[in-house]
Length: 148
Image (tube, rainbow, N blue to C red; front, side):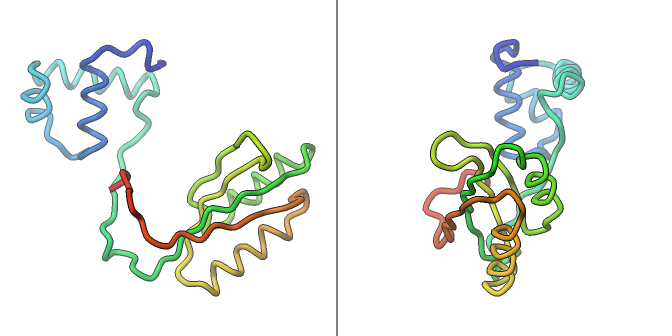
């Protein structure tokens, strides 16, 4: 299901759930001005269609205070893309991997418990067969973080 196939209620429902996925169905129904059964039916439809693929938690600032994050931009040899993606998928430090357009082919979101572990992860990425070049951007302070 594409976002073009969703109506205003579906979009509002998803927006409320992004803010707090634990919001009770009755509260969602009140906010949307529909019945609880309507909310339940829409949730089931959104889940079946793949518009909603799961529910998760967001941790607070104090949960992982020592974690250091980085964005790593990499250039990949075209024939090695699948093997590089496979190897990155096995690294526990990798929180996300995105294809990009421009000078770099992929952007990796990393998280490590400290600088030595981050440094080791960067070394492992640079040593992957097929990685031609990389640039690391260490995250310092979050000025805007809409994930929280």
